[in-house]
Length: 133
Ligand code: THU
Image (cartoon, rainbow, N blue to C red):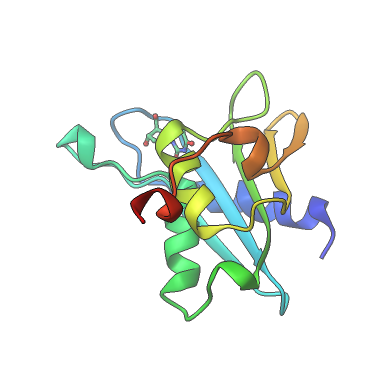
């Protein structure tokens, strides 16, 4: 699948956002090797720390359908930001555990701005399972 199509899916996922508190809708779309796309959107709660981000919901959505790290090939996210929307710190940590290190992550906004990155760039020196040995 071309990256433009995956980005369109991330924008579409924003429509699933439940964000009555921040009024900031984020969408994510995760592509698997077999061509499936799993969507995620942010889901908020009146107890604010319980809010869940779009990227994590996309990853967890795929995992609950039997997919895992090795199956993931690209992740796109989109929000109505001035610059391409960047994953928060918590998502970077989760992405670094569950998404392949060098696979493309497309950060986008609604104006069509676009930046490709990957886990290595987003979270250098990440804490990981290796540190628990
Ligand atoms: N949010 C995401 O979904 N992904 C990010 O990487 C940044 C923040 C959500 C969390 C919250 O629902 C809203 O955006 C405002 O922070």
